Length: 180
Image (cartoon, rainbow, N blue to C red; front, side, top):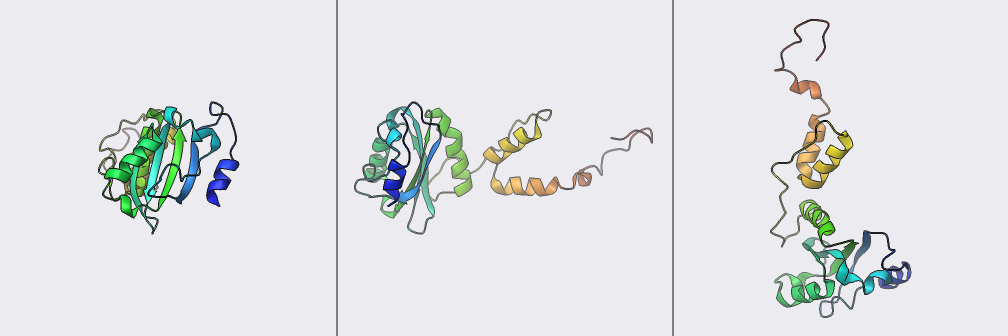
């Protein structure tokens, strides 16, 4: 059973657990959502102090809603009582982060990547992004992947395979032995 594997396979003191901890998707009891979850023992009672990212899916494993909280039991109950989409929930995946704030970027990235049906915020990536053009290229790429629309990132990567296409309107070097 998935719940037994998760809780018994992870044992460390709450303050010593390396974060983030990602708990794979598991079925959820819609009447008792929190108590039905198989959570790592070190997080079972330490959920209040951490940022928690949760992702709900329907029976076809399609994303319904992604959010974050510092109180997982309270937030699950709130969804159970008020969310129009709650009857569709079959699965939940949970990730524990060091603080509420540290779960914010992963939440935004998950919403942009998975496009859950009932999320309204963060479905579209940022329109503008400041990029350090003199820093490490991998850092700039990581920032783009985290904050931009996946389709834009794919198209940009493809376009950058042929940088000479963008130099057509750049004037030639004033002296023949000087390269741009």
